[in-house]
Image 1 (cartoon, rainbow, N blue to C red):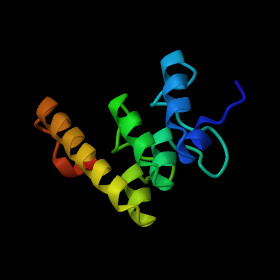
Image 2: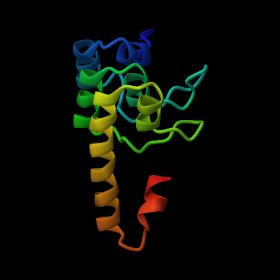
Image 3: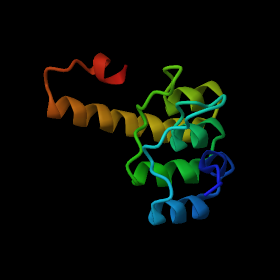
Image 4: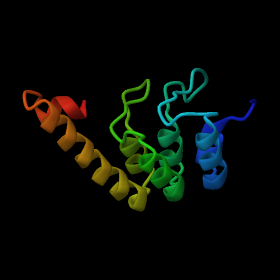
Length: 116
């Protein structure tokens, strides 16, 4: 399809995004392959624009709050830089859970390495 799902996430199209995920048209793990947002996941797009409902949906579907884009920025970094406090709290909680799971799976990984 010719739909840019990163724009859908950035514009808060939560129902459209949920349907696309259900149909397998896009995955929470897909990264944008070109343009200014190359390397961004859908969660990066939602976080950068403060789209709380989209971010919550994407996290519930398995998106990773600690996933870095091409510039090394996580969705949390983007939300914080743009002053989106509610989504920053959601992403910080999700990142803490991800870091805890990764450390539990491999206790030899220091938490700072997991966050990188």
